[in-house]
Image (cartoon, rainbow, N blue to C red):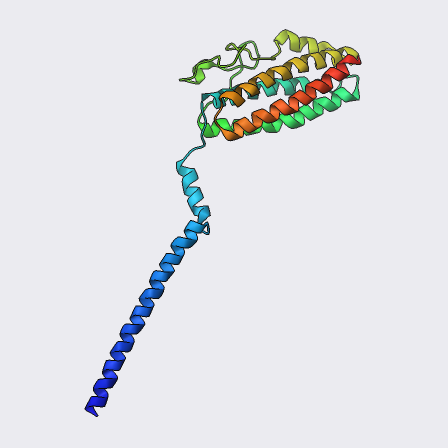
Length: 230
């Protein structure tokens, strides 16, 4: 009986040890599985959030200048487009104005969000009411950074006299003035966008710049065609 008891006890102990070993193996295997799943992307969302919080989007001075100048440039285009209602003679000009507003307002909103995320102030209006940028609001940046710009103007920007002239025009005279001014305005936007494409570093800003080039080149061709018929 004693020998049988001792054997049973010994067998029991060996069983416990074997069970413990199996449990340890399963635990270690489970830990290894978690690491593998994390590496394979199952926990990728958490890793991405941490990385995004600690690493701000890449941008440089050219990106900030692009957004800061293009926002007021677009805003002036919206002011010009808004004048078409009640003044334009042709439905084509009214349609074009509506498309310009529909395209450029979302771009203004996007660029405004970028400037906020980048920690830079919104562009200011000059004393004359023309879209522009106060160079002192952007320390460390040298303005102008684009050909043809000074602190109060930008490529294709209309003067207050230009805007007054457009406001006073009606009918066919408005259509001709609007198309002439908007062609020049678009050409200025393209110059600014091409500068961003050459000097910017933020992928989203460069993508938007290329979109502006493509869209506004097409609109310039359309406006020149319509202008030739007036």
